[in-house]
Length: 49
Image 1 (tube, rainbow, N blue to C red):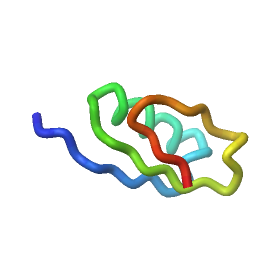
Image 2 (image 1 turned 120 degrees about the vertical axis):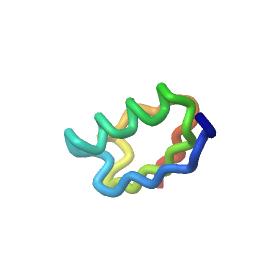
Image 3 (image 1 turned 90 degrees about the vertical axis):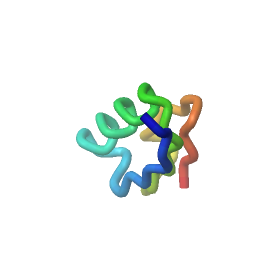
């Protein structure tokens, strides 16, 4: 599968965190939009905005 760019809105919520985990595990580049950066764990392939 070709790696893709993924945007996750509401990334600090339960569904958003799940989406980030799945997408980064599959090697996609994820941009996460969050209210507070403290509520999200940094990982490879993740850009937090």
